[in-house]
Structure formats: structure tokens, C-alpha cells
Image (cartoon, rainbow, N blue to C red; front, side, top):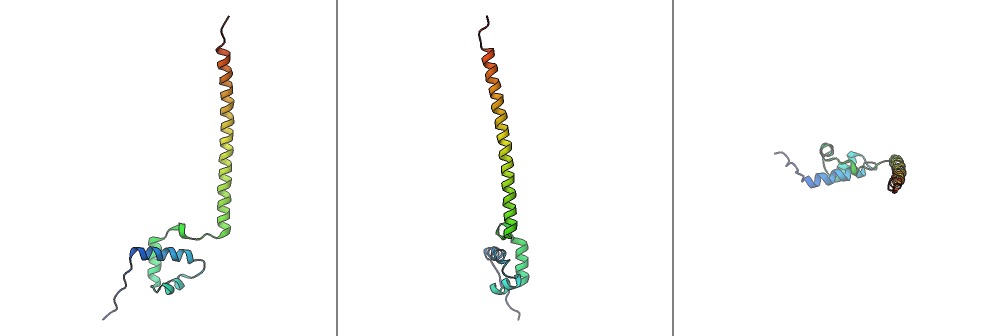
Amino acid sequence: MGEQRQRYSEEFKRRTVKFAQEQKLKKTMRDIAQELDIPLSCLHQWMNQYREFDHEPLVVEDRIRQLEQQLRDQERQLKEKDKKIAETEEELHIVKKAVHIFSRPRP
């Protein structure tokens, strides 16, 4: 007779994929499959099904570039907001002058 097929829980599959993603830079998929005693084909299939990009390590330089770009974007947004605030303050000053002029009693 044939061997019993091993059945794996959803939780095990998800944890295995997360582990594989975290170890990807250090080990090959084949090494990971051997370490966990699961068929390589199963690991590939689970990676396609349960892969979450949040668990994948980024190369340090790529992460630095990504953070620098986010910082530049935030600085640009702050400058735009500062400009908008300055414009609004100027408009408010003009409105205050107009109210003062038009609220004077007429002779």
C-alpha cells in the first residue's frame, strides 16, 4: 500500500510561509523545505497561496531609498501646507482690514 499523505493545517502553512519569507535571504527554498521536512513543491504552492509581502525582508539600501522618498514626499507636503497657511493668513488680514474700513460710522 501507499504512504499516508501528510495533512497540514492552515495555521501551519501560514507560519511556514512567514518563516520562509523571513529566511529567504539566508537560505534557499530547498533548504527551508528540508529543514521543515515538507516537500519543496508544497512550499512553493503555499508561497503562492499565502505570501504576504510585509514579511519579506527588504535589502537595506532599497529600504533606505524607500524611506528617503517618503521623507521627501512628507517635506513637500509640509511646504505646500505652510504655503497654504501663509495664503490663508494673508486673506484673513485683508478681510480684517475690510471689516474695519466698512464698520466705521459714515459722516
